[in-house]
Length: 68
Image 1 (cartoon, helix red, strand yellow):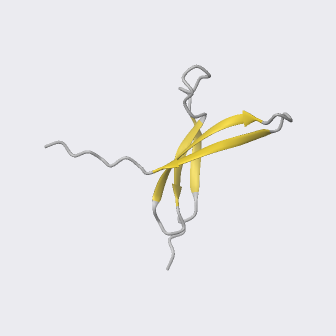
Image 2 (cartoon, rainbow, N blue to C red):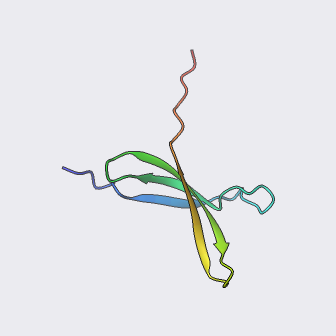
């Protein structure tokens, strides 16, 4: 039976993003249809025609480091 969260995700505004630091405007997480968690980042952009769009980047979530 599939988990109801599979294939869903979220993005939140990144209050630390500025044009100077080039941090993503939105950050969040996606759970793939297979149940794998993926970190998401998005930037708002404008095309040459002036249309707004989102540019996305997906990456593996960082492993929680365990101190020894």
